[in-house]
Image 1 (tube, helix red, strand yellow):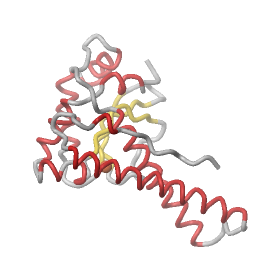
Image 2: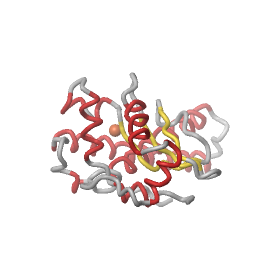
Image 3: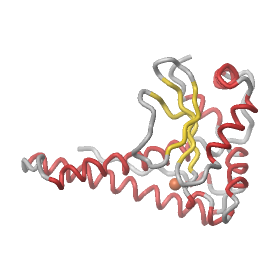
Image 4: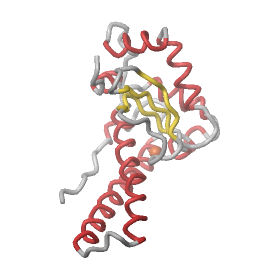
Length: 195
Ligand SMILES: [Fe+2]
């Protein structure tokens, strides 16, 4: 089985509002998800060959896989939608869809920031529903729970404490402001599947 490879996001170092220490620690944490995803996939493949599919160990690893895989993939989405230097282009397809769904960019941003500022650790994610094409801001508590079915992450914001504590302490709102100043809107828009 082909292993997932760790992607290099070191080009984000130097981004305003994110220290090198914070980013490097976050990259290391992300690498852990990639490693664990591969380890679990290999172990499950071996257990299948050994006809151990009906064991509690197989079940628990199957459950764990969603946590590790989503931890890997959501971090990739997060890092890839950072590093931008310009605000959203009001003429862009994504801006038009945000406007259609939320009334204005500001209304959308208010909702997305409020979602990210909720108590608890998790993710704020702007999804596109692939069935209707509509956009929605969703809170994800744990990597493996609560993802809306048939929806694609368009913009992902990590609000686990490791994403901001080093630089901002408990001032999560300041971190969210820094995140907004660095959104790579082109990367987010490229994820849209339904126009
Ligand atoms: Fe994270």
